[in-house]
Image (cartoon, rainbow over all chains, first blue to last red; front, side, top):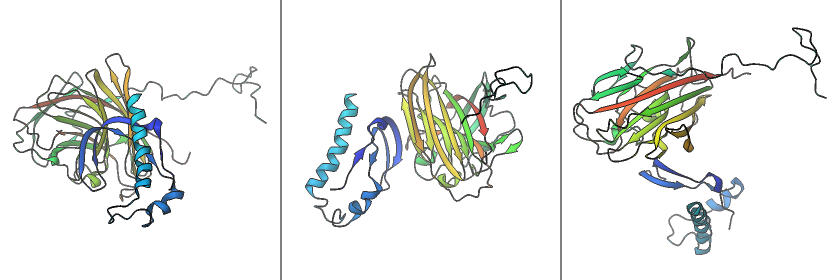
Length: 81
Length: 255
């Protein structure tokens, strides 16, 4: 599992009017959480063996959980501050 | 080994000369934008502006009717913007600023929240082509405020077509600082303030890097009005009232 981090000190709460990855427009008040993926890990993340967008079970549960927990831990900590 | 001044080269007294002083950058007086002063050109693709007036530092824009709302009248949505905007060349001491120059612009935006006729947005900042309806061609970076009729003012920055902002009942104004140049749209940051000049929020939003426009393209000042929601309509006679002031600085990029 490659490394994933969050820049905790830069989490903000803002009104955003932005475009999502799929092109849809989002207008909402939101936590903005900067996820940090080292360039040295990019190859692993983009390897189809790690993540295949056409495979419903990809990435694995263990890898998904690690990514989700990084974001959710950051959200939880920011929400409690 | 550091060099220690031992005498004042002007007076000859010991201890070195006085500290270096920047003669012109302390407490600069902002330019209060008066959209009626004759220097601005109105670009209004759908003839939505009825009148504009200026008094006590505030511009008041009176609208014609916008019967059908659309995201096209929002400055912070999608890639098309048909909302009215005023523009002029950005010059400093008569020098035209270009896309290749390194520009710092400070924008103070203050909305008269008592003029509360519709879900509105104001933008004021820099762009490259204010006559376009394509946000990527406009290439804008702005200080901004929006307010829904039942909500609080929300101040921040718009980069191209995306906004980052914070709102609250105590907000009275926002000071945005835009850094752009070297053919980039740059970055905008803001400090929102309350009536005691105390900061309530700070944040920033990055713009785009090279837009494709030549370094020689002149930078324009833009003041835009518009709606805040995709379905927001405006009745004839509805108004927006706001005060914006700016300070523009450039540096010698070779220094």
